[in-house]
Image (cartoon, rainbow, N blue to C red; front, side, top):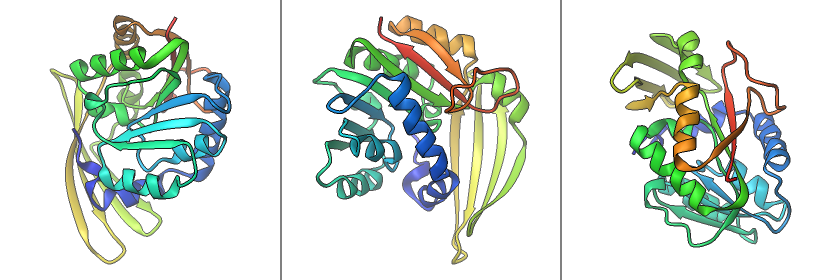
Length: 241
């Protein structure tokens, strides 16, 4: 399991994701997942809870799980009075004891899982969904995206943080191994190594099918624009039929 979010990077990530994107994604979730007040949603690998808290404020009961304990502590504090159950654990340890109307896994979190882990995760998602329940997966570690997007070395200025990525594309299994270097405003530098596993769109659909999930649609933006070659982000909508 990735430890990328154990240090300074977790603060960087909060700044990378625009609030406007989160709001658009919340609108997408309410639309395509057919969820309403009183329904239950599983937010797998929830991060700092940007979707969890937004859904809970609309009266949707959310179970949020993430292996970054600091994020879960933060969510529990922010969710006081809201219908949120936040659990510090990896998705491989989660054993659902109730049915959910929907499940989500956003922000490319799934890329930390290899093929075996991804299949097990999808099976877990199917098990926890009620018949007709839906699952939205957001990722960009897809062959058709990465083939056009990957660079060996990338520098970013993210508000007050400096951020360097050094990427190496490897095979068997297909993956990108990345050295992340973050320089905080106080000059503190943190380096982390991380691995993102890559699947083609066909492989992702096959994994879902093997787990008993049916791919319903593929979007490139939260406004439901159909995905086409050259787009940099993917939202997979699947269902338990």
